[in-house]
Amino acid sequence: MSDLASVLRRVAPRALGGLFVASGVLHFITPKPFEAIMPRRLPARRAFVYGSGAAELACGVGLLTRRKWAGPAAATLLLSVWPANVQMALDSGSGRLPGPADNRLIAWGRVPLQVPLIWAALQSRPADAQHPDPAPGKSVSVSSPAST
Image (cartoon, rainbow, N blue to C red; front, side, top):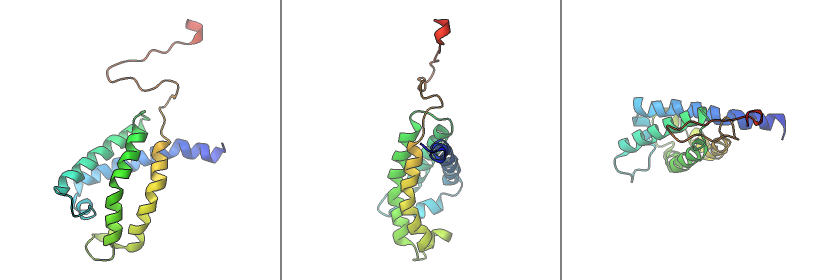
């Protein structure tokens, strides 16, 4: 594997984790723009915005700390919000969306952007791949060959 590929595989999950944390916070501070891009058939859009914001925060922290579950969870979250990106693209240019989200180029650009974001999520590995994350409340003891 080339050095660049190795660097990308190491950096991408952490960069995505930072984006998730920032976006998750925005879901709570300014929920209306997120409500505007959701499929209109969904009821209780504010609850979905808060739920997806909490999920983004959890996945972001998990990616930043290299938790074993974080990559698959983040990829699943990205797949689950893809319909909102498609809805945003379909509504772009109509004046229905706030700010840059109403720009067709930006809105349609977000749809294929999900693919490299999912790739970035799936690059996440525990900090030490030989020692998976311990169960909550459990500690992991590691012994070296010299101590056995």
